[in-house]
Image (cartoon, rainbow, N blue to C red; front, top):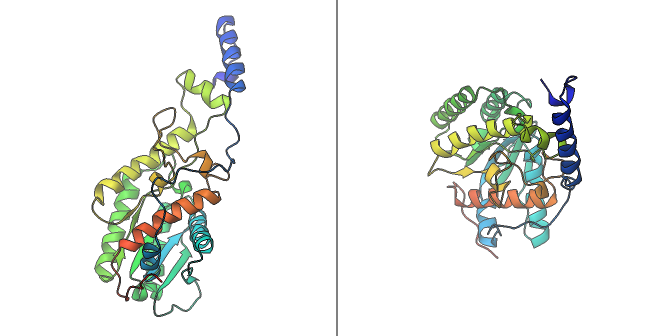
Length: 284
């Protein structure tokens, strides 16, 4: 039963709860939308890494956080005066020969299995014949506290194994699930104080459970660890659960300008180390 709905709370507990509410409310954190400067954690991108990444033909299946990352790539290129990779929506567009960043929104948010099917279908549509590298990311919406993590992970592994057999020339990049900002309003803090669960803690915990499986299964392979990039100082939340750093977020779940550049820089790093069928471009 929720502590805020108890009609027969004893007087001492009611007083204690009232004091806790006032204290926690008084020291609430600032709004999650603050756009502060971030510690880059050594993720500055060199021109050589940028040009290597741009020399690949990449297919990226995603949804809204993926759009944030693509925007971050554009912002990095514009700020440095570097050529931005040719970015093409693979849905309904002709697939070019030569280096390009092909992308498409795949599946429906809240249904991780549809993301895998959408990724496979996009590769089968012709993208797979052109791509050197392919990756698909789940959304934070796809993994909730009630999600069957083992079922999702098994489906992911089976899908990647099938794609690897049918498209042996493609280098697969694996990804972790994005997180959301820790819930630190006074209600959540009171619930933790009384040993009660907080929904967002449980949801980020489920995402981290899947992320740990990804890191273990694909250790030594190419991994775009979005969740780790979203917490550059590696500070766990109140319950020891990783969360998206509030200074990287625009709304508690998506990335702000600083977050977009930061996570996009991580993608450049990964793509720059991947194999390619194209001739690498030298930095100018």
